[in-house]
Length: 263
Image 1 (tube, helix red, strand yellow):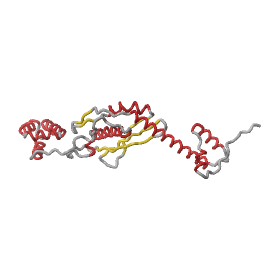
Image 2 (cartoon, rainbow, N blue to C red):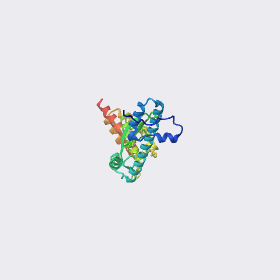
Image 3 (cartoon, rainbow, N blue to C red):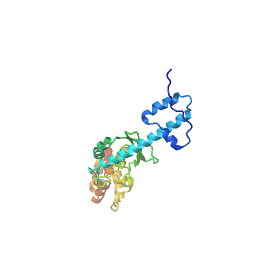
Image 4 (cartoon, rainbow, N blue to C red):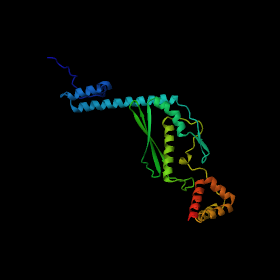
């Protein structure tokens, strides 16, 4: 009668060295664990211990592959040219399209995949943008950045709706995360998001400007004719300051005047 040779029975491991020696290779891990599970002389605790050791070993191996691939990918990456302008900050920056075109062929070649999402931010006025970065070796990392989404301008006024502010924050977040994950440089200073980090230099308004603006707001309710008349009679310095520092406010007042006329 043929006999089946079973693997040697496992004793309770006593040292870390023995534990590591008992960790199976990934190719044979499933077969080994199945054989151990069928052996009535091997305790469940021993099997679970070995499985935990194997999983940690595989996780370290996957993380090593992730890090090596990241290093190799970054060696191929070059600075991305700034291809877009922000008239508000008078700066040039690299758009997401430019970053994606320059980086995606490289990072996918090295086994990376990116997907974006949003999460809960500790600040009620911020949007947390998440980037899940996976690698073909099995390791994954999650990066995040919190972006302001209150829709406020430099002076604290509302310059966009919350919907548009959220969309803008997500776009900024995706672009900055893409730069940060791969540590990529931009050919020119990329300061497009400087309002999210600091307040833009204050442009001093002409004397009497605030009172004029309040009056103009009130006149807008009387309709477009009244608004146009008041606008044309205003000081040029007032009109220039409003148009250059708060164009969204000017557009809002004009829209208000058009609605007043409709009434």
